Image (cartoon, rainbow, N blue to C red):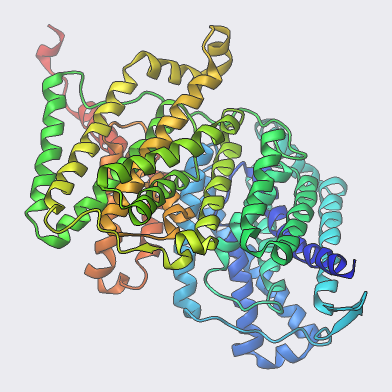
Length: 629
């Protein structure tokens, strides 16, 4: 009995941190309708600033309870100021933009802030002293429990009460609630919504910074805190229901308790339990525990799927140019061939996501789940049973198909951010399984020593990559012009009208999801064969973001968007840091700035920007006198 009681207290203490993060993220989303993936960066900023204040800059502050608390408040305030700067520079340019673009743009902000903090604070961990006067432990039910965690447990309900009073008893809070319900009406009544949105972002980021500062007596501040905490924060927010602070509170309690009990009872499956909890909640209640159905979000910026030309001769010219560039890459040496192979695999992976996004409107933030399944399926079939390359690729596709067939039943009931987070949950479950099932997957050591491709067969493998990549683009083109493609776009744009017309809406969504998953699994199998090894990172958040970047950089509604995006991302990842000395250690931050610029200046991608530039030149050119004849 005492064991479970202590674990419940551990869960309640951890829930406080989750609630501070989730409350801030919920507040920002409720007012601005922006899904801020960079929220974990403000958590990390609050932790790092507080840690340096009490450790390196003013060590005497670490010996005084009052000054230590002041350092925590200053860390939270600095996070709020940084949030205001982010709102002014980036977030206000994303208002009214579909959630997917917001997620990717704020992921770029995460990369930029992480490298900025790495430059400012250094790469090492910072161990802060324990809070003065609260360093000991008290005996409860025959077990010892830290006093600091008992104190932090009280902050969750206090913050919830404070936010409730702010939103219900103050004019600022009432206007925030009005902005949440109908910002356009509030603007029409003469209330400028911009200061309200700025205030909501500042308060939300300050809560995140406070959550980071409160972690210091328990763990050191480090540069991995942002991604580690933001994933579980999204789990809490989505489980509780987007826009519901009360839902975030109860979801934080639920996830905190499951996390604490999982660490004690099932340490190898803790992460799996957390994400399975979210998946079960969303499968039963697609809007979360206390969430309400959201208004229809903004439509995609470009709905029409653009192909270069309806003329077959010009279409063949584009494919000829693609084959020519691949042949040129092959003659450029071993390094260039390796980069070209990476880009081709990324292209196939990108097309798999583009097919369901552009035509079906299904947004996945965890498409790496099927990429990882394909990679591990191919690798394990080779190491366990000696499968050759074709059989290994088939095994990887079969594994991705099996999981997608089961998971797709839940997908067809979700949409928008809920679908993105549900897919993220699946990816995290696959990642956690690959990390913790050491006997099968090797854990962090991975599955290495694959000989699916030898030096002698490397040229044939490159030809295979070119063939599959070109076939993927051709299949996407054919899909866009097919009857099934038209049905997909009808379900995407007007699902109720499509259902009234007799279209099997859920069946159409299910089919494109499963087909997309199989192609992603094929890309994963090819990656395993190319690299000769598979690691859990194949199913990580970063891999899912790579697929999103490929699609959005080139243009989600452009036939050759994935090809352009994969080429740009592969080149930037490999060459930016090595060719520019200043950026050698901070190329991820530079990539983040580039991603933010693309999402703000040209959400339709580089090809969309090129189209607009051509249109502007035509409009500016003198009219052709003979054009009217």
